[in-house]
Length: 133
Image (cartoon, rainbow, N blue to C red):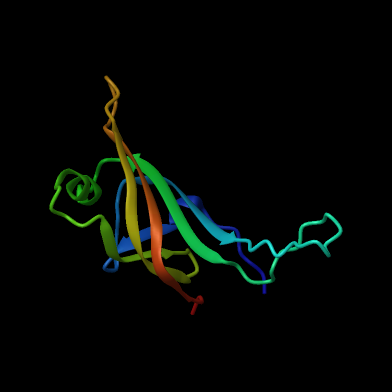
């Protein structure tokens, strides 16, 4: 199976099936925490268990303020920082869905330019991957 080249702007972050607007750069990082099983019979070489001890998915993105969802979550102390119904949707229709915790939110206000933002999300639970149709 081959992966087709695609424009980065075609990768979308969606909330309840609606594209979150304003994103310019999105990075997805899959993490697999190794389990070190080295012992005195390993002859001084590290040995790693074949399965991950902990897996996680981190997403970071930045862009221009066109949607206040993340700002509203950050600025309301009573609002949970656990965001549900988020999906990363690939140009070919494949998608990854999982709940995310908003670990950080940052805004920038250049003097003579648009207000920008940066968000870091950390997965909570098991991601569900749906292959392209």
